[in-house]
Length: 56
View 1 (cartoon, rainbow, N blue to C red):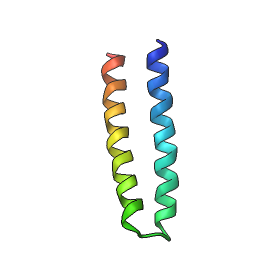
View 2: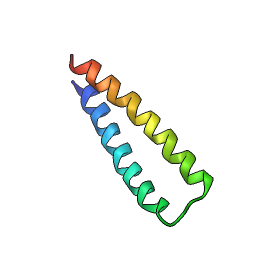
View 3: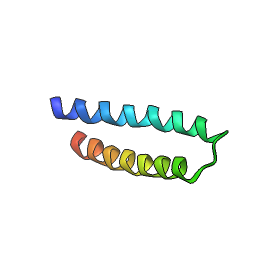
């Protein structure tokens, strides 16, 4: 159960960071911010799959 909660916490932290980067990208259109956003979204998707698999 503890591992499940940690996965959910990680997922929420990544989601907050994605929202922050998205807001920054409104003014900053550099490649590095785009790359960070893309990697975070991939990591978020992996965690989401783990959480859904863990819930079943």
